[in-house]
Image (cartoon, rainbow over all chains, first blue to last red; front, side):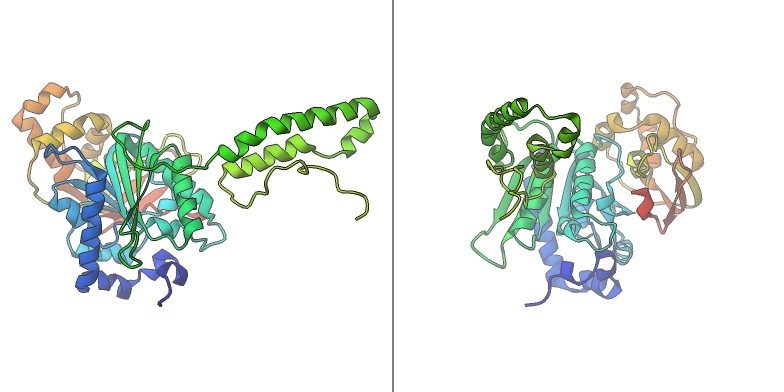
Length: 291
Length: 122
């Protein structure tokens, strides 16, 4: 099995001239891209009134997906990080406008302007930390935050992704939901390894009854149920403190305390870290002086 | 890049609060004809910042857009023609976009603005 492109080089270098050239010569790639875009448009569920919309094509590359959008009569703006791919798009004389930009730095579009957004096989690149200044979590947050802002109310975004593994998929969808999107994952052909395609369908604004997508679960539930037992524990410690009546100096030495630890852990969970240890009765307890 | 895209773009540098509209420095323009679609123009009209569009058109040497607009003008064929021409037919091929707050230049080459930010601007 060949190595994933994401593992080989950052996108702006991976999609060099030779790689970009494939997107005009390989009929297989062209065919797949067109099919994915068709499906994404279908999931985008634009109102069927024949009026062209202004759409966003995130990671437009050589403009193959954009061509399908143009065929449906829509105006579009494409973003990509690879100059070589955009050069190919210019060669193909695509109809949409192209921007050379890094979606991990935020989109830089005016709020509420876009009628929808599609992305074909691009967003998983955000999970790479190619440079020391790149933090996947921050980049995902920047991207989804700015995407949410620029979409009109009630608009949808359909992002087709190739996640490397389950945690990566979870990281991407959790980042989207944290930015205010509702919606979830649609998996086409889940039983086939090759034809399996993940579409992240995101909706702006409050979830309506017309949306029949599965919602991601287990975002906050764990911490809620443990909240009550924490309060009891804390009450216990307060009693002990009262009895001892520590001097001010001793109080300072005690450290940050259980509530502080719990607060910090909650913050980290909220930021999307999955490696935060569970809250138990041992959390924040002082270790014995000897084992 | 057409003016419709310019109308949607704002400066994305960290800390910039008023990065809209971007100034235009044009050294080469191109006009590509496209089909006029009144439906689309009516749909996109409420989303545009008219002043920004008019100023941008001005800086590209298009003086046909009126200063004040009302939705009723969208029925007028002449207005629609000018509107369509400025919004969708004139392409900025070479030049630069300039952030109004910091003065940062985003060069435009072959019609593609380079909006990549440096590490310290993110």
